[in-house]
Amino acid sequence: MHTWYKAVGSLLMLSISITLNAQYYFLGTAGNMPNGCIQLTPDEPYAEGLAYNYAKLDLTQFFEIQFDLYLGDKDPGADGITFVIHNDVRGYEAFGQWGECMGYGRFNPFRPGNSIDPSVAVEFDTYQNRFQNDPECDHVAYLENGVSRHETYWNNENAAYNIEDDRLHDFRFRWNPKTQHVEVFWDGVQVVDLERDLVNGIFEGETQVIWGFTASTGRAHNLQYFCLRRMVYHLREENDRNG
Image (cartoon, rainbow, N blue to C red):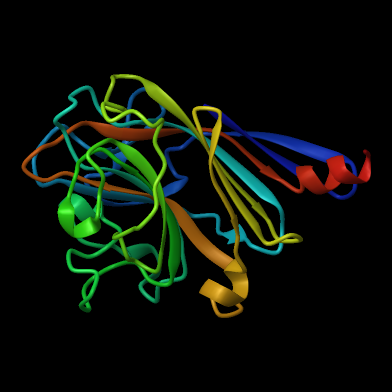
């Protein structure tokens, strides 16, 4: 069981306990785990799993989503997880390519290919792939419109940085529509701080969007899963109003 928190009206906050069993739409190898978390990929080669929440996000509202992510226990494993928000015409059937694309992007960023678009995503990358311009170390990167290749990324400035360490890692995604601000926190450290008009710049005016997680493996592999910790709507606005 996990708890979502949602502020309703000006001061009222409702706390609703829910199970994850009927909360997500699964594709590929994704599914429920006995511990209440959601598996994206088993520790097997060439797996791809996606889990989309049935409740869409409202981009006119402030929200913060917090999860624990597990990226495996083998440093040479692959490939990683993305958190994705999208309005792809395929809806809950949207997926990208496997392996280095993590079920989100496409192998060749310079040519058309199957990917999740339009979208924004945060990747937690555990394997170096030269076509995606990956550094040698594990890292976090912000992505848009199904393109996995990125020019900037975050790690802890350690070439040996490893997030396939058999531990849960804390991930938070925060959206403030008033300031058009995207923030991402990884293990308590802010790793993305971006001003971006998601509604008009990405989703062409659409405010109701699908969200979830994607992951995949290639020749190298790891068990990969996520666990919901909390979801908050409106709380920042209420805190600002009350000082």
